[in-house]
Image 1: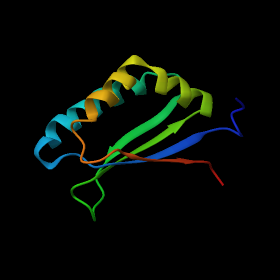
Image 2 (image 1 turned 90 degrees about the horizontal axis):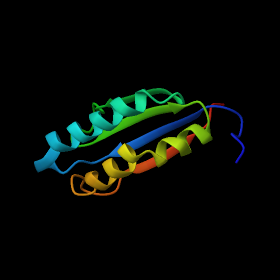
Image 3 (image 1 turned 60 degrees about the vertical axis):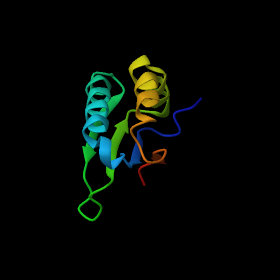
Image 4 (image 1 turned 30 degrees about the horizontal axis):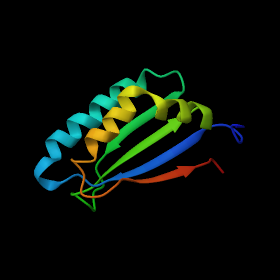
Length: 100
């Protein structure tokens, strides 16, 4: 697959279960620590929207689509996403973006 012109940005909307927010955050931070060690990851930040205290955003940038695809195959990511299923109110919304 071609990298389609360079970096890939992601905005992931995450809605943790309100009774399991601490567990969800701990799992996400663990996955984030591993991801930041990947050569294809430029940045990854877990942020809190000021207008929505019950949701989070993960802002990510990978060097290419291939780098993100490789990230998605990592065991800490596949297993981490399986664990998150029970910690979230609904599946995360993932938006893939390209620079204008």
